Length: 295
Image (cartoon, rainbow, N blue to C red; front, top):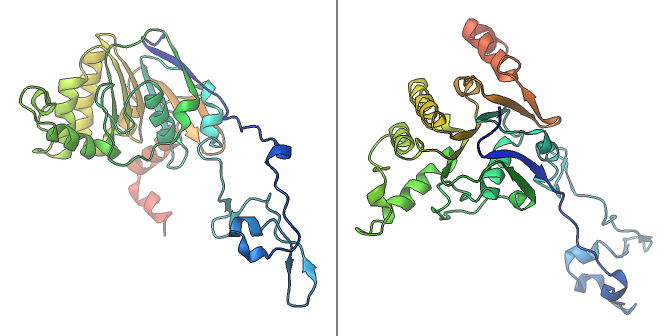
């Protein structure tokens, strides 16, 4: 089924700047003391050990390795994530669900897609721009979005930064021009109630809605209410892209389902094929057997 707005995404590898080694190389006089130079430079020179023999310093081209965790510390994150390298497999439909284990890159990807689409990294509409703590990557700069139509309205909802967004709105309380007057009170209810109040006031019109783990604020009953809001909005021609751990949202009717994997990247799946679905079914059928495996 064709997506009303966002069709697909392409990743372009970052290009390393060309370096003219001839013009940037500086000759050093031979009578220098290596300790006069910063640590990063000392790795490139020879050192003399206690025996008087000259030993080669560590090869500066070898990556630093975190021996405890066994991974390179100079990782080209997030560009080396498998999900980023395979993002061209992702084709959006009216509802697209992205599932996957922690650390597989789904939140990194969905954040970058939202930013590339013009949304604030910490959530909100295209007109709601604020920053409390800038942690998003530069991945959005290397994503090209293919549109069927450009949406006039939309929202990026991040459970992780929802409180900061609500605080920004509440503080903009100018009686004539402030945001607080046109939003529901987002601080005087529970997290889930506030989330649903925002959804009812902002997610029902025709638009593009990108959610990152919306279930974090919602009980199963709350997720039922969110699904009802989504159905109403879809009937008006909206589009939803949802990153989630919730089996309820993974099973959204007629959704295009993708699963992310730290090694294999992203690929089309189905609700029945998801690894989390199998685990949830096993747990619901026999909770004790799952806990027994942990002992």
